[in-house]
Length: 265
Image (cartoon, rainbow, N blue to C red; front, side, top):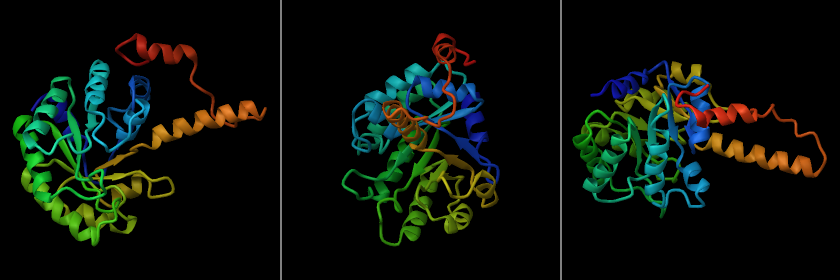
């Protein structure tokens, strides 16, 4: 395992969760690095929407590779959301992840949700994980189940069943977005892998999630949606001659510097 991969693994400490903000382009990633985040993830919605493509439809295979190339010189540990791996062939998924790893990526988020609203067979999801770990052993595979998001019957039982299969396949973490707050502690204790949850405004904060045993908290598409919302709000306020009531925007020079140096200011 490389030093960078080991460093990323070490950030996953149950009880002391890693806050993983999710970027969608070079500017957002560099800005987060400038604020001191040691690791960032990508948001599949943000990457897809920024390119005028739908999320969770297998449309951003090339976009992820291009983004990884543009981010490779940033002093940060990068994990990439690859949806379902863009293939039902485990070997093809492993080959794709190996391409990302060659660009310096230290982790991937690999999900079981499908565009038709179903979950992939657990055996197929496990086979993808095993193939990736065989191809790139040190890479952190965060195995995600959409059991709650897709409204699967008995989501708790299904999530625990899948977590057990993924653990056996070699997954390094388990991501369960949408899991109810009152189940997070049980999931952290029973999945047998570092638990990743999605930050939810109004929900438990980092300290509370840490007390429940969570190892990683992702912002998902929240930052992208907030940035888009702020832009629309500001444009509407200017048109209506109102005070936008937003925090001060970064200066031109600060943003320019993000792209002028390998080391974010």
